[in-house]
Amino acid sequence: MARRDVQGRWELRQSNGIVVSVDIQPLRDNGVFNGTATHSNGSIHGSGFGGVDVINPNEFTFTISWSGGNAGAYIASFDSTGKLRGVTFDLSTPTSTATWESLRTFTRFL
Image (cartoon, rainbow, N blue to C red; front, side, top):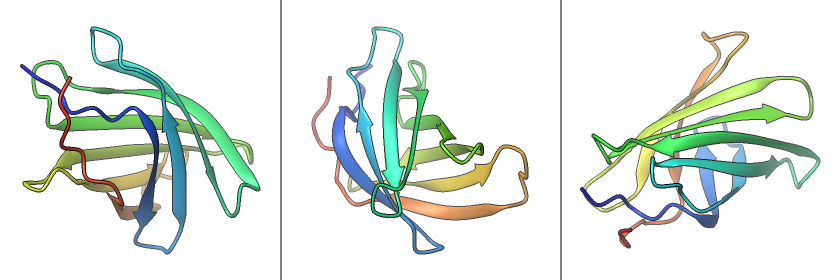
């Protein structure tokens, strides 16, 4: 089943006002990718890994280890327009959550 092409640079907006810039490397055959991210005008940066599910290609996950020592999980699904919409939470404090959406529409398939 085809997966949406999430690779490259794009931004996501969290409900708490933070805009995160991500750079997703090309997906491997198994749907896994590496990536980097920044926010707060680049003063906070991180790297991590994620994937677009092979069985359910509408599911997206990305875990980022931030320079401040925290790590965040980003979980989302593609909506009918091709935007990602989901939730993020701090891995050390899972009750600290925010919703998020991509500022890019993903219409291209791999």
